[in-house]
Amino acid sequence: MTVPAAVPVHRAGTRALLVDLPDLATAMAWHAALSSAPLPGQTSVGAAARTVLVRFGSASAADAARGILPGFLPGDATSDEPRDITVDVIYDGSGTTDLDTLAGSLSMTRDALIDWHTTTVWTAAFGGFAPGFTYCVPEDATRALDVPRHPTPRPAVPDRSVALAGDFSAVYPRTSPGGWQLIGSTTQPFWDGTNESPALLSPGDRVHYRAVTERVEVATSTRKNVVSGPRRPVLRVDDPGLQVLVEDAGRHGFGDLGVTGSGAADRGSAQAANEALGNSRDAAVLESIGGLTLTALVETVVVVTGAVATVSVNGTAKDRGVPLLLGAGSELTVDSATEGLRSYIGVRGGVVAESVLGSTSTDLLSGLGPAPMEPGDTVYAGPARGSVRRVDAPVRTDGVLRVVPGPRDDWFAEGVKALTGATWAVSATSNRVGLRLTGEDPVTRDHEGELPSEGMIAGSVQAPPNGEPVVFLRDHAVTGGYPVIATVIPEDLDAAAQLAPGAQVTFVEYRQPDQEFS
Image 1 (cartoon, rainbow, N blue to C red):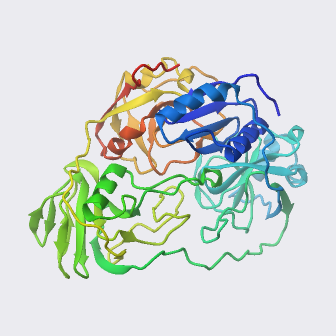
Image 2 (tube, rainbow, N blue to C red):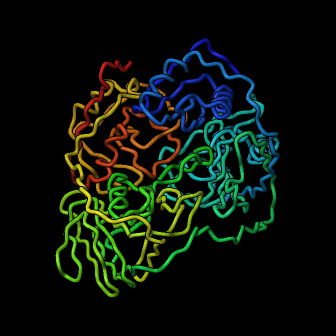
Image 3 (tube, one colour):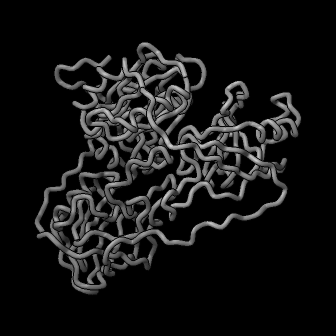
């Protein structure tokens, strides 16, 4: 491990800091130290290839840490004894793998590549991209290869594919897009959300790949996800519109497993719905796009917040933000939004659904949480507790998003002005993972090479090679390999979540009073 005298620290929005480090070993040492002895106000820390991303509960805590971290020296943090995990791999040259072509490009035979992969001892370094996707590096750095990614990622990599990229090896835990070189497959599950420890690998584990010729399926847990507390059926979904999801405040603290926070895209609107019904502010609600129709199975109280849309009960118009008493058989209709995008339907007692890692939120990127609702599905609620009241539920749809430059604005010819000096439009391909933007003047890089994977947060504005920015929303990946030109401040993420396809977006550089950003 190389210990620098001082390290560069970059702002990632107002409540996170990205620390540049010389190598993975140093990043893992920092991660261990900051995990065992967090800084004041620190909420999480995540390691990546050559960085650590440290998050804080407030901007003031991040400011204080920015004065500490450049000279921070990790001590000898205690850690668990590493486990030895053996992964059985079928190395085949079928059309679903790159084994033969990759071996040729590396001037190796197929057998030599397999021998290198199986005789190398790997260390599980950090999680990212997807739950259970763990970046592993050779324990002996001299055995590392530099494996190029595909220039165009596959739209669907088969689940449990064994893959290489850069000096990393990993297993795709589920079917997903990916640009790594595929060399084989395994039957071992790398993620099982029903287990107390859902990821097969944890940082620090020693991994041994073993070549096998027989495909022996490994049984996974049959225990169902947890539904905590009492529940009662209250609503039936008749028409889910374009999408209806269950969302709460999200699942946090699992970044090392590749699990992002998720949760309601517009948290303010979700919290307002719960406040109107006397629920906990973090209780689960329904998040809807494109309108929906629900039928009450029993007498219950609901409220609609979020996007501006016509709300009616049995054909009679009602106000948003006002608790509505539905008798058994009553029909609640929320039309498509006329302003904004996402509506939130709160139910008195809170929506109750299966919980994964302590949250009932649906994460569309990783596939965690309840499936999107379909016609005929039942909505369950918990016991009612507090009193109901009307709430103000305004939404911002002006398209103005405040950003802090960086952490990688120096990768671009004009810096953050390449982003703030243009007007962008929301693409129809946008979703809960991110707002995909188009514009007449794409941002251009003036930096050669690829960026090693590093931590991402909701609000990160990535600039892929095509120059069209992507604003990460709640279901973003934990790590990413494209430079982040700027970061939307947390206070504007709800507004970003309400921008519909075709909406105009402008970015404005944000500066806190009496504070310089360098």
